[in-house]
View: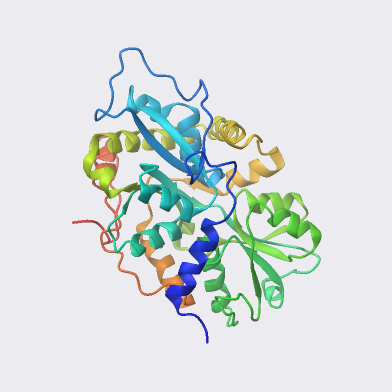
Length: 370
C-alpha cells in the first residue's frame, strides 16, 4: 500500500538530512566556514549589535547562495554588525540547515523554498520566518544530446533530481504531470524514471552513463554541460516574468523576537550585498568563487562558473507568490499535505531597510505574520 504523503515527506527529509556534508560538521549540522582575514575585519571602535558576541549565519556552497557567499567574503555582514562577529556555517542539505536553525546552532540562514515550507509546516508555524529574498532562477534541465533531442524524448529516460521532495524534484514532477505523463512520486518510477541523486555525485553518474540528464540547480547544471550535456530547458521560462524563488533568507522566530536589531543589520547587509553584486557582476562572481574555495577547498572552473552565474538573478524580493505556487505543486505531486503558510513571511524589517533607501517595498502575497 503506498505510503501517505506525510510519511513520504518525512522519509524524504530523513534521507536528505543524512546526506554527507561538505566537510566534517563541527557543530553537528554543517561545516564551519574557515575564518579568513577578508571576512573578519572589525572596525576600530565598533560596538556590538544587540549586545551579541556573534551572529551565526548558514548557507550552501552554491552560486544560488551568492548573497551569503559575497556578503561574507567582502565583509558586508561584518560591517553592519560592528563588533558582533559573523560566524558562517556551510550546509549541503536544506533539512540539515533547518535542524540547525531549530536547535539554535545558527540564527539566520539562506535556503531554498521547499526546506523553508517543510520546516515551517512541520513545526506548525512556530520555528521560522522568511524575512527576505536572495535569488531567482538558476535551475535547468540538462540532458545527454545523443539520447534526448527534444522535450518529448525525456519520456522513458533516467533523469536526476537532487533529493525526494526538494525544490527541483517538485518542479520536475510538476513538469512531468503537465506533459500528461505519469510517475509515482515516492518511487520515481513511471513514464520517466526520476532518480534522486546527490548533486555532488550527479556529474559522475552522468559521465558513467547511468543518467540521461538532470533537473538541477547551478552550478551542477553547468558541471554537466562541461561533461558534454546540453541545456534542454531553463526552468525560468516556465514562470511569469521568468522569475521564481530559488533562495530566501530565514530566521528563527526566537532570534527575531529577541534580537530585531541584529536581524535588521543582517538584512541591511543583504540589501547592500545584492546592490553591489548587481552593480559589479564580474567582481561579485570572483568574490563568490573565492569564498567557495575558502569553504570547500576548491573554486569552480570558468567553464562552470560563468554560465552558472549568468542564469541567476539576485533580488531582495522573496517572490512570495512563487513560493506559494511551489507549495501547491508539492501538494499536487502527493508529497505534501495542504500546508498552512499564513505567517511564513515577516518582511517588516526588510521593507524598513528598503524604504530607508527610497526603494519600493516587497509583497508577502498575503502570507505575512500579523
